[in-house]
Image: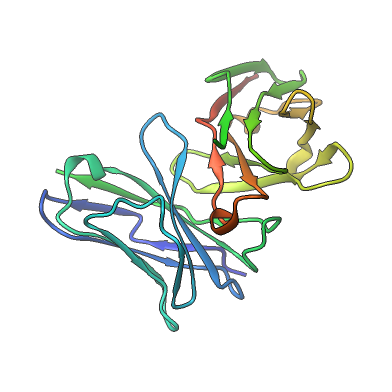
Length: 115
Length: 117
């Protein structure tokens, strides 16, 4: 009974490169959320997706960041032309129904370091 | 605006003693409240949640939390702390009346709990 899977666990990129973070939700879950955790801070919401749909992307920077959750395969968070300020831990969560009372279950995170 | 405050960055307690990790929240509508725990280099693990009903919620690993609407608080408690409880604890809230932003959780900054032997 696998939980939320994220890969890679650690990712190092040089400024200007692209970062691709992948998230596979728990079995049976079709709702995915991405959060970013900066050092010494709590998690900040970025984007909420359902299969093939972006439900809420109001927490995601307008430029360089994009997210998708295709019909088949994992959800992808893509950061183009990374900068040092993008260094953070990125967590993905999934839920069964997306309802307000539904619990979000988190993956182990991807720690992005931009050199 | 929706927000969560965890007023203590650190809580230290001796093993066997009761522990409390504080959380207060601000939402415009009805709050749905959650506690998560994070161990080093790991993701967040769900502990418990308050949706409605009994103000005292029981969760995993012997933890419980008390919802207090008048004080807008949702403090995490455990009657007898264990060394293995040492971790980073996050309180989160979801606002039931936020339309398209229903999905998001608002997190506090976290409280580092240290239980010494």
